[in-house]
Image (cartoon, rainbow, N blue to C red; front, side, top):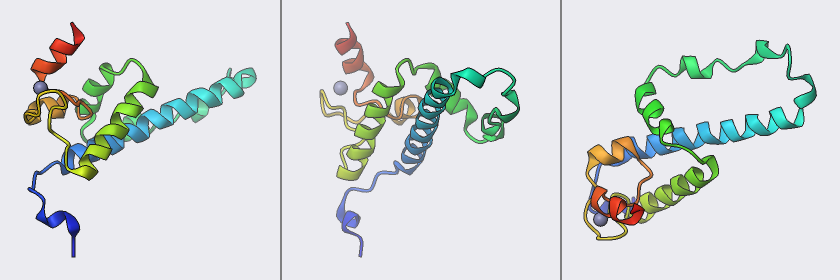
Length: 126
Ligand SMILES: [Zn+2]
């Protein structure tokens, strides 16, 4: 028995996957940056273990590239991703926090952790 079954069904699974993938990648980046800081002394000549996972991620690479190009502050983005995952759990994901309208999936595909529709986002930014 699934408690979520009574909820209005919206197909946000792909966005959840994107959010989780993005979260992992950002956390990985944060961690490798700390590692580099901790082991700064022997950074030279250590290029043999540069992770190749970036090259291996064939699927949805273009989405992630696009999303990551918008990422300026990893920590802030992680918080936004966590908030978006929380909204997925509570069934509020995809609703604009400002006006309550549905955020178009096209926008969610570009920025899966956004909490606002285009109109409200541009209002809030100005
Ligand atoms: Zn809105």
